[in-house]
Image (cartoon, rainbow, N blue to C red; front, side, top):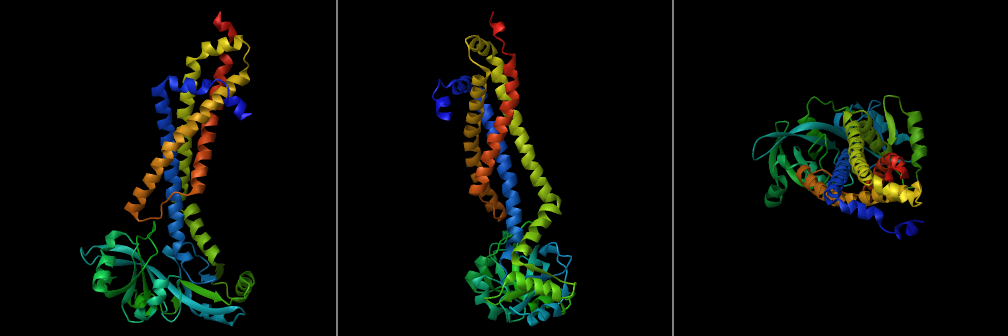
Length: 388
């Protein structure tokens, strides 16, 4: 059907190219709408990706948290004994307490402070999947030493460069002098521009208001042959209700749901995509409507010659398809460049994905065809009697 349609005289293309300025305006409008949609979706995906990165980096099968858990960036604590009670359950191989808080990191060059996410771990356990952390666990046993995330925002100072040059870097965390003795890579997020890992002893020294008996996350590692769901159900039934048990995936999804549903950020990104879709649709409608108005006499003549409305609808559908494809290409290419610029400027995980590219292309097609369908109503006024 499509081959038969496009093998005919390319009336749709001829009409579009006849008014070159109008065509360029239409393509620019569609490309702009696509860029806006790509930007909103890219920033939203970056928000979710960066906010879930800490959960995905944890070396655990199950997680214990406070029942009121929403986000690791403002997490409530619970009794550390609950974690060690989990050791009594079949299938549990080991546990690891993890403390989390936001601290103030002083730039060793400028003296300015930046908010940083601080993880406090027991060096005798392996709480993280990072090989760099595993290699430096011995270093963390020394009080007031830290590992620094080299993918952090540059505002924290040239920690990576200084460390590789000197072997250690001295700075302050919450006005406590610390030594950076290693690096790892996690990445910045919307809530924290950097990350650092310290021992539980250093954590309590840096955050003296935190109780030694309270932790924010309990990591549970299961034996190789253990059924994750079965052990999770047993823990939920056997532990008091002042903690909840989550799988690692559920832990990450809870973080995603917080940012997507409990904060205005996710709503704003969603509205941005809708507005971009409407803007592009209005532009396409105006172009197609103007094109129909300019050619009404010709359409009336063709009707008098025996061409049906179905033929004109097919021509208009072709115009909508051509506009969608030709407008999408520059929009996609410019969005890839925008992602690279944004990722470099913000140190956030903003990148193009095949799924997003296909999704925006589908939205572009829908946008153009909806606009074309609305504009088609004008074709009904092309009466053959108007020719005479």
